[in-house]
Length: 257
Ligand code: SLL
Image 1 (spheres, rainbow, N blue to C red):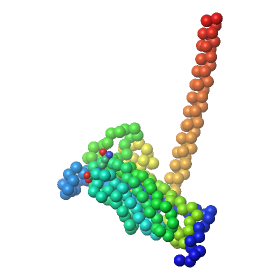
Image 2 (tube, rainbow, N blue to C red; image 1 turned 135 degrees about the vertical axis):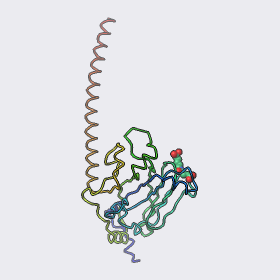
Image 3 (cartoon, rainbow, N blue to C red; image 1 turned 45 degrees about the horizontal axis):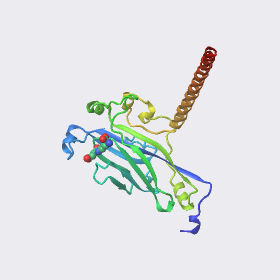
């Protein structure tokens, strides 16, 4: 390695888009019978993948192999699982299991040694049950869930490397990420597409696209406007009540005078 490789390129940032999350399906009664765990109801896969999907694939994301910069992904499962800490040292960075319950998975990404980067920790709530009406805590029965098809819960993120080492930067630039499609070719991940409805679960295999960022910005802007108008409304109510208080205090004073 040339000594210039160990030089950091100051002021430069480079990122790689990833997704992390899970897919889950309901086990058929035949599949359940074949398992050593009769109480297991679902088969699921938790993964870290490139954000872009292979065209016409039934998999969310994963068009690019991320092992050129990721050395290991550790998925820490619930303690009810045997060997809950699962190390995956090559692509695809994923773990498939069966089970009956949802829980929080800790995902630790270790980068290749040459990167000089610290490991990164992400959290994902394993989702088995379909997206239901917002605020509705009810879990649809398994036969209905089975008809709705696979459940998808994926989060888009960008891993940013600041002041990268020259050799790591070279490595990254020789592996440009597959760009996301500009327009919607497939349903976007359900909870973003249609927060709330059971129908939203029927969308098929979702895909991330560049429009989603714009739509997210629009949702944030909408929320900001709602908050400002609520603030205005409450300020009005406060002023009115204070006026009333003053009036009543005045009356009280003149009565006791
Ligand atoms: C719950 N807090 O009560 C969660 C825990 C644990 C899930 C869920 C399989 C374990 C095994 C499994 O699904 N664990 O194979 O014994 O909902």
